[in-house]
Each structure stands twice: as structure tokens, then as C-alpha cells.
Amino acid sequence: MPKNKVFGQAEGGMEALEKEVKFRNITGVHTSLAVKDLDKASEQIKAMTLDTFTILSVAVLHDYFGFGQIRCQRYMDGMDKGAEYLTNDLATWPDYIASIKEQLGIELEIRWNN
Image 1 (cartoon, rainbow, N blue to C red):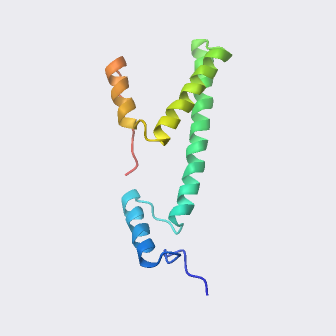
Image 2: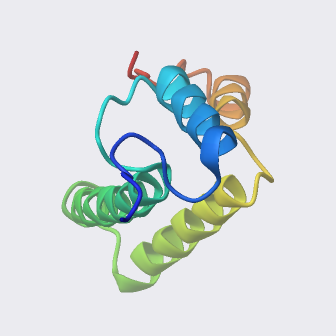
Image 3: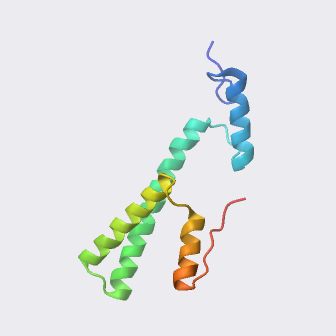
């Protein structure tokens, strides 16, 4: 009989279950999906968010600031590089926030889900 993955009793036994419970408590995610399924879904959500943000940003840069194809492409390349830095732990959101405050005097924050 297959093990019940809904309750975290998949491969790995008690250690896997403890890891699953810790993950759910830290993230506040209450679902019957396993961590690997949540990771897969969150990657898709992140990609979609980045795509929609990029589309809106390029539209604003073009419509309001007159950016053409070359400048919009430079912007998109910079977004890709920034996302890569975040993904590879070469930069953090607090790093970007501090840099923007220091260089531009603009205070930004992320409205984290609690």
C-alpha cells in the first residue's frame, strides 16, 4: 500500500515529516501539498510574477519615459541579472533596498506575507 503523502509520510519517514512540519510552520503555508510540490508551484508563480512585472515596467518605460527597444532591452537584461543575483544568493532584497535608499534617497519596503 502506498504511503500517504498528504500527511508527509512519504519517503524519509519521521525525519521527512519533521522537516515538512518545520517548513509549514516557518512559511505559514497550510496545504496538503508536499514541500517539493510547493517548490515547483512557487517557481511557476515567481516566473509569472517576474514576467508580468517586466511587461508592465517595459510599457511604463516606453509610454511615460520614451524608452525605445534598445533601452527597454537593457532594462530587461538588468532585471534578469538582478533576479539571477537574488537566485544565486549574491544579493538580497535588503541589499537592494539599502542601496536604493543610499543612492537615491528613496525608502522602499517589501510587504512580506505573515
